[in-house]
Image (cartoon, rainbow, N blue to C red; front, side, top):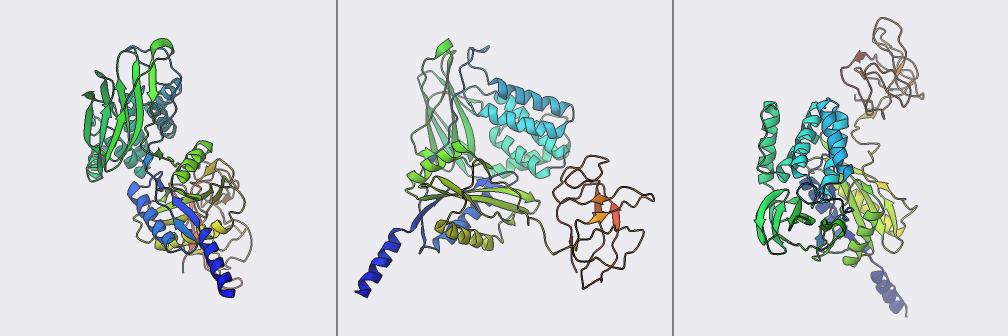
Length: 479
């Protein structure tokens, strides 16, 4: 009898084993698809070792998530539909900001303009997008954001492989673009097959491929934008995600008010790609639900990998319960950019996911930001003991820090009495001449000495020096 009960209990446990599908981790700001893919693979392998509590479900076949068609507007000069007013305004604003040397504003507007412009491949201004990529990369370089600049150049090379950088740009910029093209050559290639009404013309990323049917080979992996034109008013657009194989596109036209026609067609080759980004909203949730159901999974796990320092990537993740229609966020994990030491982080993440399957906890309301900076990211060693006593390099303070207190308070070494400067780890963009109030812009100073809490009232002197760049993050000391 006891044996029968035990056997029944084991069977019941096996039946309720959670079915989890891991949506391929998305590569965000500063992270490469290779790095996010490597960490994704490590994590999945770690999950498979927990076969007693969960089952990793195979990923279903996917197709690119196609945006909804924008409202039809009056035909433009060629008789087709013009880009949306919002897309055009963002692009124009970004280019003007670049010309005015307002690089931070330029980066924000250009990114938005590119995204909006390519949301409707049937009407996009492809030459304008190419120019926006160039200015985006140049603005990032001028701001000192080298990683972002290289990412923009790689996107430019993927979008326009035959693009030739015009004269006038610095030689270093030209060299970086050539490097981006060489990196792209080493990435996987795929094929796009385009069919449509007889006599119509096919385009990929704005390049005229001639009349359909068309087979475009050696297309770099990633997102690409297909447009098919018929008569003056017939337009078809589709976003496709190219991998190693063949992506098939079949265009069709129809009638609409005003004669203009723009179709963003969804093919039937699989479930829509969840298209994970840093922000998870209701539309993303709907795609995740469809993805999980296509995989016959109870839970879907999503991840977004992004850069948190020159040598560090962070993965923000969340678990979604299909039954409860509820998200639970997990603790962000960080690892090196080459993913050489990420095994431990994959183990931690898999361990936390296993616990979440038992109890999701408090639901995470939408929208969810997967790119929250981890509190411990980029820190090492021991945190400096805090004190409210001002520290000055004019006076060697041999009394040492005392336990307790607030933030580290620094006084500028200027020979005159200046306001106190409070180092706030959360401040990242101090303006010139800014003074410090907690949580507000700071003056750029750095701690150049070491403070050691080695018993009551014991320590060594510290120094404070003015820096040319702002200091952010956690102040640390090693000994």
